[in-house]
Length: 172
Image 1 (cartoon, rainbow, N blue to C red):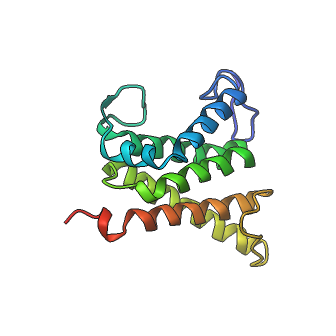
Image 2: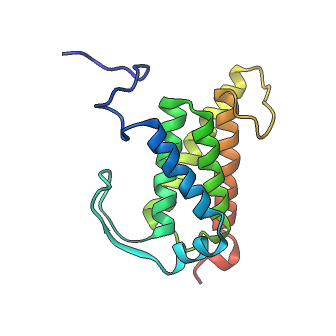
Image 3: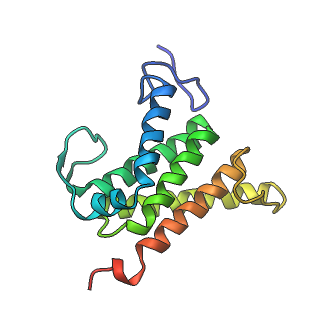
């Protein structure tokens, strides 16, 4: 029996996708869809998924397509930051979130909780990394290092939260 550490290389048995190219294709398609304004509006307002059986972490029922997309992208961001350190994947995930953020309304309660949780953990990690780096932050938009990946992710997630709590999105 062998033990696995966080630094082990991903094998076909322990990765959530079959190949990195498949993950890229799916993400690029999602990016293309998210650039269409009507897709964003429709995915949060009109399209609802009654039961998500394939999501293993929690039983999810009655979730909008938009909330489900946000949940999957948040999970991908976390995976990329913690295991893959893939700047291309991270940049595209952030782009999808930014494209969908103006339309993010009536988020599922689990998605809202995950958004806050991922933002909090990413911000804490970024703050620690900046402190380790002598309080030197890297340029905005640059995702060539782990520090800059965390910084860009924090900015994106905070932007998403900002859009999600604007007055017209909050229930009265």
